[in-house]
Amino acid sequence: MIAERKDAHVRFATEQHRRRGGHNQFDDVSFVHHALAGIDRSDVSTVTRFGGMEWQVPLYINAMTGGSPKTGEINRDLAIAARETGVAVATGSISPYFADASVADTFSVMREENPGGFILANINANATVEKARRAVDLLQADALQIHLNVIQETVMPEGDRSFASWGPRIEEIAAAVDVPLIVKEVGFGLSRETLLRLQEMGVRVADVSGSGGTDFARIENDRRDRPDYSYLNGWGQSTPACLLDAHGVGLPVLASGGVRHPLDVARALALGASAVGASGLFLKTVLDGGAPALISLLSSWIDQLTALMTALGAPTPADLARCDVLVQGDLRAFCADRGIE
Ligand code: FNR
Image (cartoon, rainbow, N blue to C red):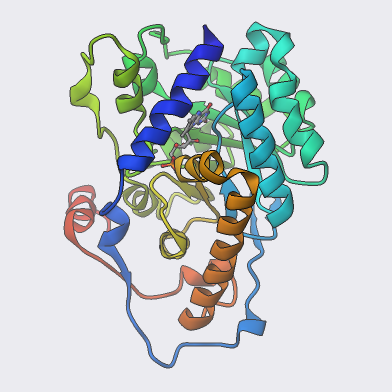
């Protein structure tokens, strides 16, 4: 049952990314062009530091899958691509392993293929401290992700209907685990108010994972016999909206959701993200061309991001946040409604 669900998520997410294209709210963000801002490429470093972590590049392959033979093979390819490019990589939710320990290797394959890499283990917000520790142990994980997915659960026929325990559970895990904890959405975004609550709970890094890319309301509607909740497709705040909403909160934020190319990476860093991730696009890449295709894509993203930082005069990812950007269109209206200057 869980294995079938994991395979269906991969299938519907990939279909979405084949159909998808064109505009999202990242297009409402543009850099002001300063013709004399450029620096030397040799002066650019892509290293990013946040929440006690240091990554060689400000990119990561965000949480997706595991729990079935097919998704175990996908995890193998993701881990190989991460190893070859030095990019951090997350597992999908480890809940299938808690239900059936025989699927352990569909997750632990990521550590076998990427022994020296930065791996994030992923659990849901219902998980106990004991499960959080088992997830970290299974992967010898360098960090732990907890996902918040209330809209996905709501549309999922077999989904959770009780969410009040999430806050206390997160607080317990934040106090108990000895690797960095990152709380993330799954494509609906984290509001300023949510970030402030997470901060109160002792969470030190959040991944806003906003809308504009993979839409889990649509995926769960596609899995239903009748798409009763189709009006929820497109729910949530976009990733650039979340990054602007996060200004001044003081919590390091990661950006994922709808990231399409290196310019979106630079835009997200300019809006204050410490690192930038993608899921659906990388999944499609791996399914089409295996690990070599993702290695090639990630290598060219790193190369192009370095080129953009050179042209924009930003020696580090954090310096991109000092670049002048213009915010237009619907994103500007969002800022006005939320009182963001
Ligand atoms: C996901 N995502 C996800 N997130 C999570 O925290 N745990 C999970 O198990 C999964 N599972 C999952 C499966 C598939 C097939 C996809 C494509 C995605 C959500 C993911 O980490 C990310 O937050 C969103 O997909 C938004 O990013 P993109 O896809 O727009 O780049």
